[in-house]
Image (tube, rainbow, N blue to C red; front, side):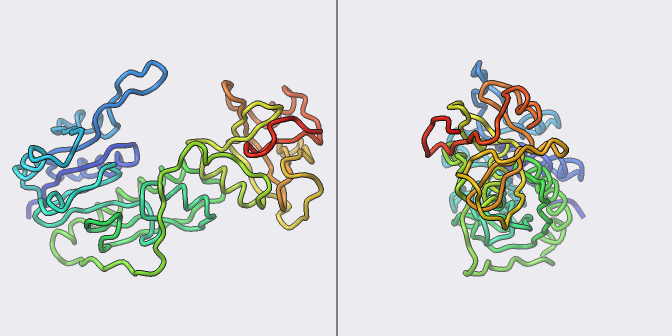
Length: 326
C-alpha cells in the first residue's frame, strides 16, 4: 500500500525532527511551506528558516509565501493534491479553504496535552506554571486556535533541571516519533479523533522580553520556574549594581523558610555547591549560572570572585528601585 502524500508546513527548529522523520520514513512530501527568509543577527543578513534548510537538502520543493491566504497559494497547494497537511509550528493561521485541501486531514503536532496550553508558547508556560508533565497532541486542525479534535497524545515528565531549550528538544523529538507511529492508522481510518473537553482549556501566548523580569518577592519555586521558562529566550533578568544581569540556572532551596532579609538580598555563598543564595519572598534561590549584559555566561563562583560579591548586597527586581542596597 502506497504511503499517503504530504504537504509539510513548519518553520523553526522545533519542526525539524518531524520533517526529518517523514523524510526518513520515505513519505512522499509534495512540498514544504515555510516562512520567508528573515534578517538575523547584528549584520541583519537574510537567513533561511531551519525547515527550509532540511527541505532543500532533501531536494523537496519549498514555498515561502509572505501571505498564505491568496488565491495563488491555494491553487498551488490544491494542485499538489496531498492526502495530509502536516503542520508543526508554521506560524500562520490556515483558513477553512486551506484546511479543506488535503484529502484525508490537516494535522497539527502541538506541544502540549490539549486542551491545556493552546497557542504559540506551550512549553514555556508549562514551565512557568511548574507543571510536572507535558507532551504532544496530534490533532485535526479546525478554524480555532488549537481547538480541533485529537487523534493521539503522548506525554513525558518534565525534569527539575529542564529549561525552555531542553524541554523544547525533548518534545520536538517526541512529536516526530508520535506522528510517525500514528500516521498510518490515521491514513487507514482505524484511529479516530476525539473532541477536546470543554473544561481545562488554557492559552499560552508568545513570551515577550519584558516578561522576563524576575520578581524576587515571589516564592523561591516560582522564581526558579520563571528562570527555567525564560531560558534561553527571552531571558530572565534582574539588576545588580545597577547593571542588567541574566540568570541562566538556579534552583529553589529552603523553600519552607521565612525570609530573613529583603527579597533579592544575597544571604549565603555555598562554596562547596557553587551556589549563590538569594532571599525570595519565601525560601531562597540558589543561583549557579549568571551573565552580566554584554559578557559571557559564568558560574556563580566566577561571578562571586570577579565581582567580589558581599553578603547583604541585593539583586533588584527591574520593577523596583535600580540602585544598589547594602
